[in-house]
Length: 208
Image 1 (spheres, helix red, strand yellow):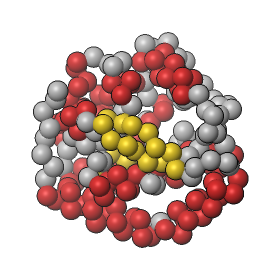
Image 2: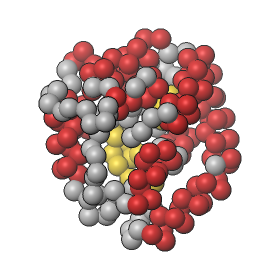
Image 3: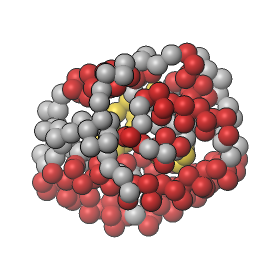
Image 4: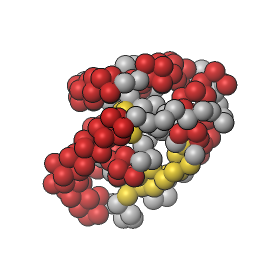
């Protein structure tokens, strides 16, 4: 197990203030997305998935559902395994599954804009995630990288982070993990604010 680095009161205060404010300001958008999914795609509105938090403790991460309810997770798992092994080539400059038939019509827009991740503000308020941190990993993903990257679990995962604003799906898994470690080594409230300010332009200029 990795050593948990205590969360400073300033960082936690920033998380609480911005996450609560974000929930209030985004409430019309949240309601609109809720109704869009409910009216156009059979099944639950929210997608719940086990992820690894600080010290690899499991928690249930929330997202708006962007795939059909019968979507086979094995498709994504196999892709990630191949990506970790360096056996995946970029398509249109990105490392991602293209033309994925499992994605719903609302899901295509939500994934492209990252609006499907807004419910993770609840995870931030619960203290399971931070606004800024390493990308929240699936349990099977943690088994694919070496001991050198385990330090990424010394802090809480984030809604955004250095991985996301420095290339996102343009990066290999190793490159993304190194950005996670860079965050662990240089984290500060100032860095968090800088990453938050960079996140919107990164989303508008990229794709998922």
